[in-house]
Length: 477
Image (tube, rainbow, N blue to C red; front, side, top):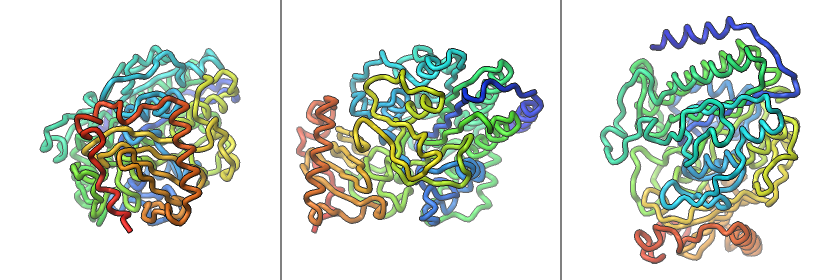
């Protein structure tokens, strides 16, 4: 199996390269699944060189990050997959979209423009493809994708819920999580676009590293020779991560062989933060003694940094290798960013929350201009796998507010220096806390965001709001 892929990549290298107009760039978006901020063997923040995996080896993902600009404050739009993918596609927060979890009634207005449509409006010659996990309840061709896998969700990536032995123990497969075949099809689409001398956008949405834990036997054997870390020590997960990394390496090899560096951007990010622990635990929000996303708090399902802060990097023409921006960026910034890089922001939908990251690519200290000055996250649900209380968050400048709706309590953190959200500043800076609470409440009102007491979990799990998260016990004075 592996030899077949290698031969395919070598064949790609022999293809003659055509070049369309340099001012019509190509875009490759690599979206990983449940991928933690510290899950690479290079840090996403160069000022924190220790904030990386102490077990996984990811030389190819490291190379992608190091060859362009990394965003130390890169955020997913939501702490769970479906809302994040909607936000990325339509440039809106999950609160505005009214899709904050994959469960419950889907209230999204699907009559919107997505990334591929926006690019085709700028240049009708664009070809667009989506491979892998879609997790939007409308077909990709509705949004301008010429080639796609349909309405795929977790099941197509070998996810089997409520079978813990199969889900968390791990097992071998020739094409684990489809990482190699998805990458091969992506390369073939790119090659076809180059041969046709047409600009392209392709979104490669990996099923890895979401459970089930699936890996190649070769990677499992190789990882078995590595020393386990104190934080990361799951053999099966490390092997799955290695397979993902090898597939990224194949994509980068094709990128170089096809001579795409002068007019092609590669965006690398994740749909949400990594699993907080393996296997999952139902703790009612009680703090973990140690978590997989350390130094970040918690992980997937929660609006803490571990659930939202993710790997985020862009490589492409004019971007300095090894550069870093500390400006907060988010997944719903990608729609306006790609439009801006493609040559026009005039055709963007009226109600978007994202802003173009283009100024950052030449000036890492630049600001991002958005319709709302801050990043808003909203999870108005009870969820036993996470904090188990509806909560919302606002990132504004160096500060972050966490609002717990049933407890009627907010936490304030200066996350530029306190990435672990260890010190609540509410009593020290009550004016800032009140100001940010007002900003957050105003935004949620403006977009008519889902209310916790109107969500399906309020009565059934939350007993009409009487259930309170145990997470707040951590900050009792």
